[in-house]
Length: 245
Image 1 (cartoon, rainbow, N blue to C red):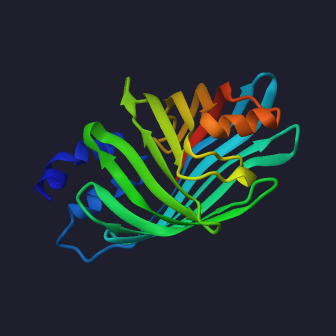
Image 2: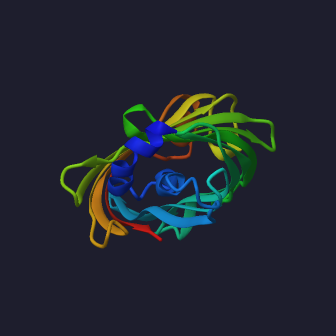
């Protein structure tokens, strides 16, 4: 607790986008009754251009609750403009509980409803800050078909100045069995790496950015993509907006 009260206030000022860090100031007011906390963060709302094809993508997050318990909704999507279809559409609804000064444990459900086959999953995981201030989501999934998978999502905000921020990110997906209907093979299935440079316009609440994204499929997942006539890797230029409410 002392580490939070003495050390995190400057980080709160610099990284107030992070949903996890919003509670810093609340925790410093321990003598006051617990407050109702809530917020909406659009981490990514962007246009991606790769090989002449464009798509719209978003990564959004909202929560409501107390310093100890929170209900959280996460949504991620990729919409292909020419095909007028969702290549990816995922929504998670989880309950989080404070486990340590820096991490929450969470459990809930996930629904994938892209164009084509749909899936539902049970979810358990961790959300918080790892050493060196990396923001981390680590999840385990079990689908309605009995297929298990895992995902590690990490992001870091490197302050170049008080307004210019470089944001490297990485997502790693691992499957423990084949789910051919969803185009996922066992083993390391896919990774996504990103680098975005943002500029904070309004009190760090609105931040336009530009950057690059690289996605690659591996193993059986790559085989499924090749058989469907899809590329196994892709580099995209991105332009977008980050917002915090």
